[in-house]
Length: 131
Image (cartoon, rainbow, N blue to C red; front, side):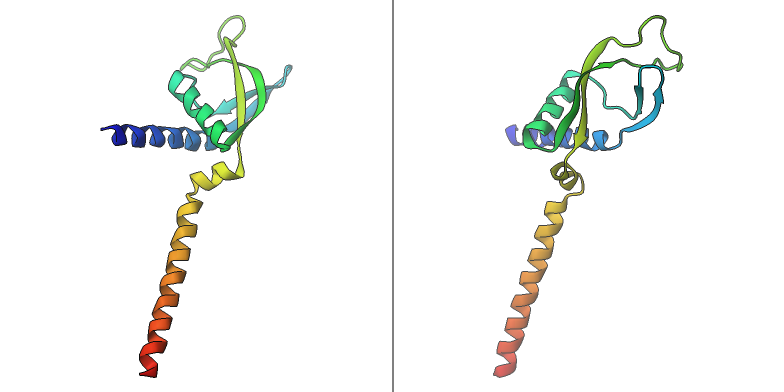
């Protein structure tokens, strides 16, 4: 049971990393240089721990800290007063993070395995041809 818990936790961490990769700046509001981000990662406790785990592993790094954040309601209208109700960080994905997203480690291991297998087949073919 403990193994299943770890696997689901790792899947959640990688899911947050993939969601972070889908974010994009939709527009910049002036005055104030306010970025409006589409597909933003939700701010909750699970996401925060996943982002900190990704940072610990070197998959992401903060671009800016203590950035004012707020949510746009479903109807799309800005609330009266300040729309910002919290602060947080903006992250960028490192090369290691992109490798995790694209599963580059799997492909490297697969190509090495195919190369070694091809080498073994050619050695066996040479030995059989000599006899």
